[in-house]
Image 1 (cartoon, rainbow, N blue to C red):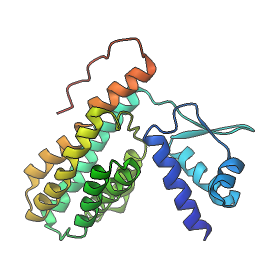
Image 2: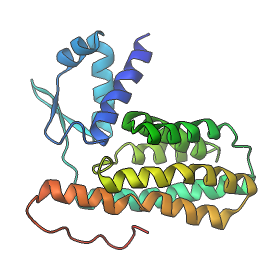
Image 3: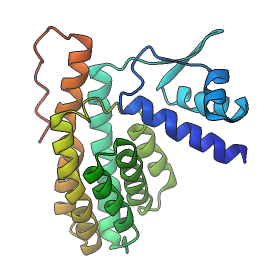
Length: 226
């Protein structure tokens, strides 16, 4: 039971952080969070400790856990690593021409979330979709690394005009990813997945830059947002 509660707390807090609902410097108190959720402190503490290990929050003595402030360098490094590992996994999946019809359900959830403008549902469905896609490469360590990188992303700007437009575009791309992978189209799948990942980069970087320097002009990214 505590394991299920731990996963629920983990999912909720992670979504709050990566979507920008909980901004850098925000504090999470184990007793306060447990009380607000109506659960014991054990699953809450375990969930927060796991998020601390992933680098999203850090423990503050006698205060709780503070949301860590990301840097542009860290964000760009995450995109670089995600591109390498996720494209590698997808290439393996395409080579095997696996049956990925179970992913359609989560592509449908992504599309529904976009239509409803439900950010939480979008993030959860998108995460599950990519977890299952990567897992189809049959390399547990690779899946763990990819999901670890994805869970460290900060999706600032996801609710901006550009972010909402990108969500709409990405919804259709999920179906295309399934089709290309099942057809064994390795090169086309790699090209699509690269765009699928990188198109978010300028949106996140602009939002993060504005947070750090609200009065300064945005410095262009390195040209990966294609």
